[in-house]
Length: 428
Image (tube, rainbow, N blue to C red; front, side, top):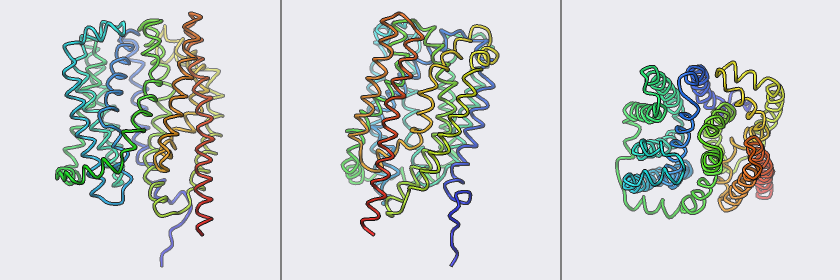
């Protein structure tokens, strides 16, 4: 009998992670190469408007799927996985329709956010939220069936099309709103390409079984009941630069802060999202089979802690000069903000790849508590800066508050893994 080699270098985990990570690295390199051009075309206000638009669309997309995309990975039965996917689609169609009905009130909504420029582009938000939600559902369907190459292809294609359209419309002089329109166009094009190239694999999703949808909705009710509020709180707290800094300091500060977030956390998210999806599928499989997961997580956490610590320490001293060289004159402040954000970025590197443990072990209620704590910590930190009328203090408060809560969450994750391993020993 052929024995599988246990070494991680030969594992399925590494192969699948490499597929996603290689695609993400390509996407990240393209993004870094294009931003020095974009920052010399578009103003900081333009970046602030794009951040506000994408933030609103992303939050609405979370509501749209009701977080059923995560349920697609979990059941052994294909019938229930299809039912969960279709339940998410029904929710997405409903929310998209409701948001579309709000278009006539765009000026009032933009006025509440003190961003009147948003009213001109509000009509595109239903499109953005629908495309984002549909991709979230497809993403985890592909992940369930280990089609990680398709996920990687989408990421690369979206980045390439986005880079081309943003540069093209900017060169054509269509600057105000160009970043917004390009975001919608690139998302739609990549989504359409993914669907058209995988019609055979998506065929099971077209057969609607009302009983399976109802059963999946009942079985995975914790996702809309607890994971959805958790995701909303997480997303809102992650976009407090829009909801609190914009009214207090203006869209220009949102643009600078948004650029700092993008340059600091986006590379981390790209790496972590690759690990997240593969680890989610692999961990769910092992927990279903009641096998150990300790070694896999020990390797991940120790290496991430060491490499991240060394890399961030070295970067700290060169960030302002590096950002000014990369983005152009007037963007040095972005590097200064990234310096302040490094405590949060470091703990994000450790926690983000294993956030799925909340769902695998059915601890959505406690996960929601952590998201509320994260939100409160960030609000308090930013409020301190607003009270002192100090933008940099607001960013530092956001970072330190986030790092403290994420550190506590990491400790909780380690305890979950330890308790699971103990349960295996007791059964044995």
